[in-house]
Length: 119
Length: 108
Image (tube, rainbow over all chains, first blue to last red; front, side, top):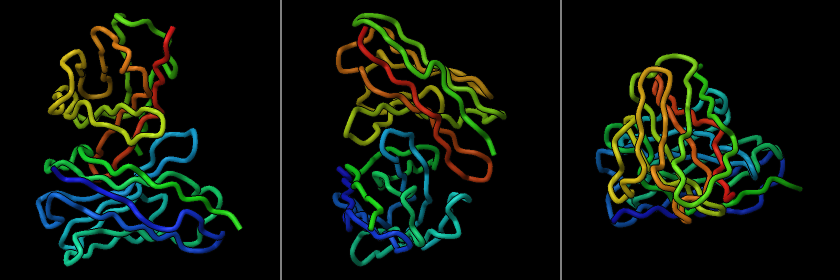
């Protein structure tokens, strides 16, 4: 059973870079699935950030594209998110998720990690 | 960009009630529509994909229908564990994912 676990700092300073990692267990990141990051500000809805394939191919939400980098480390079976120039508006629970092989929905989610942007 | 709207945004219901939530897309999205359930402090859980296909392990009281621009999620007989927020999600032709604003189902 594939499981995902997010990790990273819970507090980031304004104008800094948010960095998170998603560890994949119980399966290989080199499977036929794409992998994704999604966030949810406190009390609000879900926002898709972007996705990556094990080859390194990526797609990003146009609203965040200029600040987002998603990368993959096959040797560690994990993928990562970097979001630069953060502001308080980036405060959210960040989830990593697996995309179904048909690339139409997110079938496995991590538990989420809260990141607060504050000085 | 394709926008998703959900109605109602809030729903008060009793155990045993039949509940229907609607998701509308600003443009046709074929059947690329999924539904999720989220409980407080938890990650969303996939219920339905491709508009009407039940995800493995999801109770059969959940069902989905629709295509094009209008979709529905139905819970045939609401159970205590079903009180949660429900989100629809679409995949557009540019391979970008968008979520609806959510529908909170609360206890009457």
